[in-house]
Image 1 (cartoon, rainbow, N blue to C red):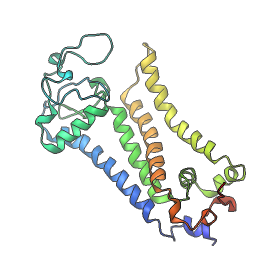
Image 2 (cartoon, rainbow, N blue to C red; image 1 turned 180 degrees about the horizontal axis):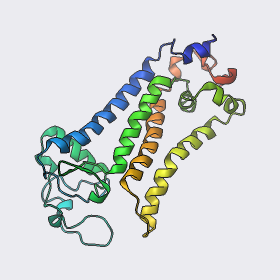
Image 3 (tube, helix red, strand yellow; image 1 turned 60 degrees about the vertical axis):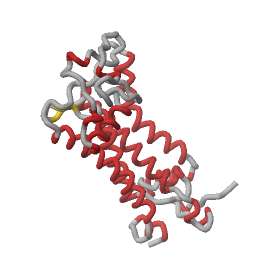
Amino acid sequence: MNELEIQKNGLTERLRETRVSKILGGITAAYLVLCFLAPAILPAGSVPELSGRANAIDYAYHDSWGNGEHRGGSGIGHNQSEHGGSFAWMELNPVFAFTYGFGDLNCHQKHYRSWEINGNQLPVCARDIGIFLGFAIGCAIFYYRGFNRWTIRDTFLSVLPDENTESLYHNDKRLIAVFAIMGLGLIPMVRDGFSQLLLSSYESNNPLRLLTGAIAGIMGGWWFCSAFSARPNKFKGPGNVLLPAESRLVTK
């Protein structure tokens, strides 16, 4: 068994890789659980139908933007009094307030693109649920298969079986391969999202939003774990990095 096979069979230390995966995946998974736990525990009907703006605080207080009357044709916001009344996540306990506040800031929270539990809308839409789920899965995959290989691209590709990446190293197509893999993961979500935005005749559905979000999330978890795990200072030099096809890194 050569050095690379020893590494790939988990017989070498991967302390940073596993630690990074646990932290990123754990934080994401914890928030994902809260997205279901909060509406399930809150009294029925505590969270009405929402419709806010992405990257903005809309429902912190009863006089916040989201609780107003918005009857424009932009598709952003609605007349909140007609959708169950006002909502203020600042009035919730600190944990649930964080859960809904984080969703408020990062998601549009459109009710027709979201699920509800116990008569309460979830903090984020179905696509974001998929993204968080996929991100946690991507971290888990890296936890079991990822290795620090100096550069982000080589660390990213370490998740794949070495025999399937040898040609990429022979032809030095590693960066192209990383962009291609990321593109394949992101394109379904981008296509579905922009089709909704640009085509008035097209409206996605929540299962499709969940699926496309999860695929994109896997790419995100995989890439972020690779980015935080790739550390040149863990090696004596680029020649000590073990790569497929007996390749070696060189510095210019």
